[in-house]
Amino acid sequence: MTETLLKVENLKKFFPIHGGLFGRQVGEVKAVDDISFYIKKGETLGLVGESGCGKSTTGRMLLRLLEPTQGTIEFDGQDLTKLSKEEMRKMRKEIQMVFQDPFASLNPRHTVEKILEEPLIVHGVKSKEERKKRVRELLETVGLSNWHAKRYPHQFSGGQRQRIGIARALAVHPKLIVADEPVSALDVSIQAQVLNLLQDLQKEFGLTYLFIAHDLGVVRHISDRVGVMYLGQMMELADSEALYDSPKHPYTEALLSAVPIPDVHVKKERIVLKGDVPSPANPPTGCPFHLRCPKVMGNCASVRPVFKEVEPGHYAACHLYDEQM
Ligand code: SF4
Image (cartoon, rainbow, N blue to C red; front, side, top):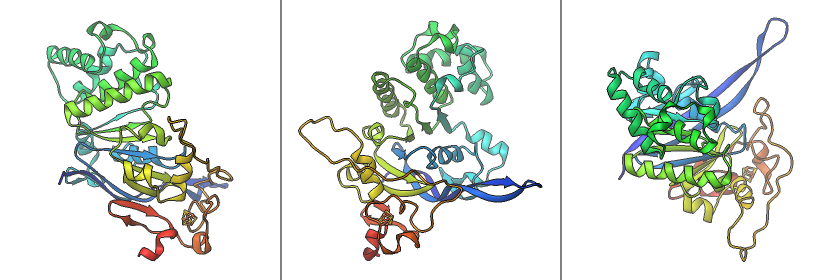
């Protein structure tokens, strides 16, 4: 069995809300509310949900760019939540992030060479020659040329900029890449090229990915398993095939009904959810999805469903599966 690289248990992130005359804490936003998952070495876990569901907060906590309120993050046998700032800085060599908006994440005043050299300097590559050689290698790896090194981010297209973002993440040979909506800002025609590049790099370097997206269509082909989040909680998690072919959770069913099918002969009914996603500052009691769920029943409004295995390797948090407990 393949080794587990990352194991997240009971992870929470609550942001305090301050108010009143003295700026006292008057509430909290439950951005991530008790989620658990693992990623095996060389695997891609897709993490999907509407904006504000806590998927990006989860990604940032893995690198401790945000401090978890509670829970453990075990990476390669070490609990990252217990590491000091300095230990975590060294650990970031192993876990890198690719951001949604490559333009915002690349310093506009730096050449590509300087951008790619920076992580090498931070992680102790002292020789200028060695850094130059690595920059050349990285550009080639992501399908750019050596002459691109002297150019600035604004001189590139969106797709090329994301290639630079990927090269920067790869610079120090990480084991895990957290890709936070890496293709959402790109034209559809370019999205496939960047997804293919990520897949090729995974094969070549044995990378492990957490791939965050708001659309189940995007993660389908790149993910081995997929987790679906709603209002800070994990609703369903399963092998890609099982999740797409036989979703267990009503929220996943609704999301999937909105994904276009390429075959025009296959007809499917779109499930239109009523209402908006409630505020994570004031989440509903019981099942977080009960105000919008087409299958809502007796205790959904009062009892939070347990996230449990409903079929081998297939997890869901829904009272529809209570009798299996
Ligand atoms: Fe719907 Fe109830 Fe299941 Fe929540 S627990 S998804 S409200 S059926």
